[in-house]
Structures are given as structure tokens and as C-alpha cells.
Length: 198
Length: 198
Image (cartoon, rainbow over all chains, first blue to last red; front, side):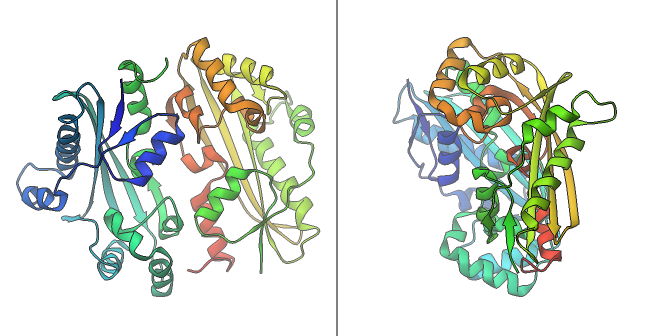
């Protein structure tokens, strides 16, 4: 059997590989921004719910081409007040996002889904609450300069696994879910599916 | 000014460097096992208290030779029931520790201290509760074989930042404190001391 991560996220791959999971990566071609826009503002559509929809879409898309494999799909949604955040399209947009998040709390919803042959075998969502400190403009510019275009790969424009941690004053919730996926329950699922040693 | 980590711990150094702290490392010559033995069993001596004593000892020892530097000392104590755990002296001892911890919860206390010129400027302790699953003997042997003698560098015989995560079913508490030091409050302290940009 095989485990496939339906994601181009370097941090998700690293998390799983560091924990000893042997896998391959097949990024799914899903227009995430379009799906988010379509759902935003609809009554009854929560950010966590949309993260789950996106995680499932990615896993299903990849599972079609890999019969029998356990395909992991994942997604994160960031909301602050009424606003949902996408990955910034440029460093300028990252700057705007970080200024908006500065000095406030936001909620990060992480969803993970395991699909095999068109069937969702398991799913999970986790929510974390993160509070950014009132960092100076000077700090922000240093941060953006050091991070460069890489910053555009992360929703909200921060890499909490790196120097981005200095943006925060408080982090509440599962750290793995904040980084990209709820790892402990996913490992338990992989054991139950026979993909990891008991 | 300068920041010095009074520790040989690779993970503590990595945590700080990843977060963008420029520092040098000067491991302190402290017989940790002896200090733990001396305190264990004394009424009123908690594991968290001993972690703090050790963190301060290490920082003070190094601060003597580095006037003006902000010296970070850190320590962790692991207790399960009445027993306090040391770093295992051998792979055989790591096996015994992991068998004892298997299927149970233990408490990991992390202490961090910042000393400058003989004065404790700040300190913090954090406690986390970790629950190991009932892993098989086969899993344990695979884990020990893969980890090798490296396992003897960690109290309790596990590397939760690596494959050791598969030993666990639940982790409650600050993940940075579990890895080696409460990072967010330490970063705030370094900002207040003028060692990091505000």
C-alpha cells in the first residue's frame, strides 16, 4: 500500500516525514482561491467547513489516479473578524495582511482528510487561536525582506515555523494543526489503515 | 550585547535560531543527574522546582565567564507517578524507560532562566502532559534501532520532534516547552532586554 500527500506544502511533507511516515507527494490541481470566494459570505458556511471541503477536493482529485493508495488532503483557513484570508499574491499584499492581523487575534482552521478509491475514510478539523503582538513597522519590513517571496506560500503571510514566530505574542491550540495538519490523529488513522506499524 | 545559550541541546539551539535569534552556545558543566538525585524525595521539592534550579545553575555558571551577556539556561524534568526520569545511560535503559511510560501519562516540566552578570532577570516554568499509546514491542525495537545512541540525549528516551511522535496518543501543553523551552515568553523577554527588535 502507499501513502500520498495531495499537497505541495513543504511543511506538511516535512511534518509527516520527520514523524517517520514514508510517502510521496502529488499536488492537486484545485483553484483554492476560487473555492474560497465561492463559499465566503454564504450563510452557514464556516471557514472550518470550507477548509474541509478543500481538503476533500484535493484528496479526491489525486485518489482518482492512484487506486488503492491512502491519499491525504489538507487545507487551512484563516479568519480575522469577518474576513477570510488567502495566500498573499505579492509581498505588498503580505504586508497589508500582516498590518491587518497586527495586535489582534485570528482563528486558523486546519482540516485533514484521508481518501481511498473515492471514499472518505476519515477526516478531522482543528481550530487554533493566534494573537499577533503590536510589532513595529521596522520589524515588519525586516521580516518581509528576510522572508521574500516565500511568504506568498502561506495564508496570512507568516511562517510561524521560522522567524514569523516573532510576530506572535500568544498561540493557543495544537501546534501541528497550526503548522499544517493535525498530526497525532492522522498518525492514529494511518495505523488503523495498516500504513504504520502498531 | 550578546545572547548565549548555556546548553548543548541541539533542539534548543535550533528552536531559537529558527525563530531568528542570533546566539552562541556554551554548554555549562553541571552534573544534572547528581542534582536531581539530591533533590528527589525531599518533601516540598517538585520536579518543576528542580528544573528551575538546574536551569539557573547552568545559566549562572556560564554568565560568570561572559560579563554583560544575556545567558539562557534551561532544563526539563520528566515525572511519571512518583518516579523522576533521567536521560537514559544506554539503549537498554531507554528501552526500560519507554516500557515504563507506555500506555500512561507523564508530566514534562520545562524551565528557562535568563541571567546577566549574576542576576536572574527572568524565569518561567511550563508543564505539559503527554500520554503514550500502548505501542507493540515490535514498534519499540524498530524505534530504538532507528534512533540509536542519540536516544540517550533525551530525558525519557524519546525524540518527539522525530519518529518518537509515533509513541504518543495525546500531547497537551505548549509544544515549544515540550521540545525544550517556552519560546514565546522567552522571545518577549529578549525584546524587553533589547536583544531583539520590537
